[in-house]
Length: 211
Ligand SMILES: C[S@@+](CC[C@H](N)C(=O)[O-])C[C@H]1O[C@@H](n2cnc3c(N)ncnc32)[C@H](O)[C@@H]1O
Image 1 (cartoon, rainbow, N blue to C red):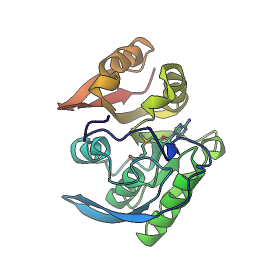
Image 2 (image 1 turned 90 degrees about the vertical axis):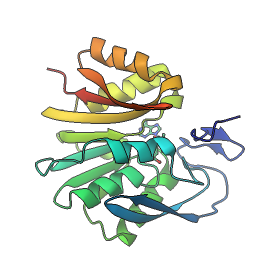
Image 3 (image 1 turned 45 degrees about the vertical axis):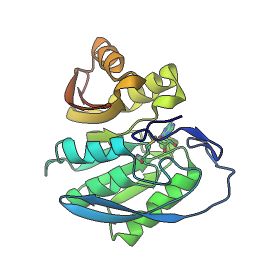
């Protein structure tokens, strides 16, 4: 049984990180209210946090530093229906926010949500279609911890090595899902990582580019 602060990964509806969820669609509108913005987001079965905005995601959006004006290219690893990517895009209208996800239904929702919110600076893409030469000034993510440790390490290594030299990533991770050991692993691999903020079950990790 999951605690209320935890969005389950595998439900009777299937795993949220399937490429093509088999469960029938049942869209619903969720409200994301932050001190500086409000978004109406359509979610659906077969995507992460389909019934309510994830607590960790909201914590990241409340506590991680707002992207600075010079952050022109940003990335959300595992965008789902878009709460992080769209918030970044709203906070920095001059930036381009790449929103990637393996889940096709999530990508379609994210694209539609960006369009409904009038955010033309969100680029939704399968991971493999992000241009190779792009470098990111900021990465913000609620990463898919439950894909397993080695898959997660591979995923983070792939994208953290695409931070710009002075780029920074902010990751929200649940403490009981290994936030502290992930911080140590990142640091050992050469990405300077530290705990930026900690509240109840969550940690926000700040990770810098590897030199
Ligand atoms: C914890 S959820 C966060 C979703 C969304 N950002 C939010 O805050 O509601 C992680 C997301 O990562 C996606 N994902 C899983 N494996 C991935 C991969 N290899 N590359 C990109 N996204 C992936 C999942 O489909 C899922 O939508």
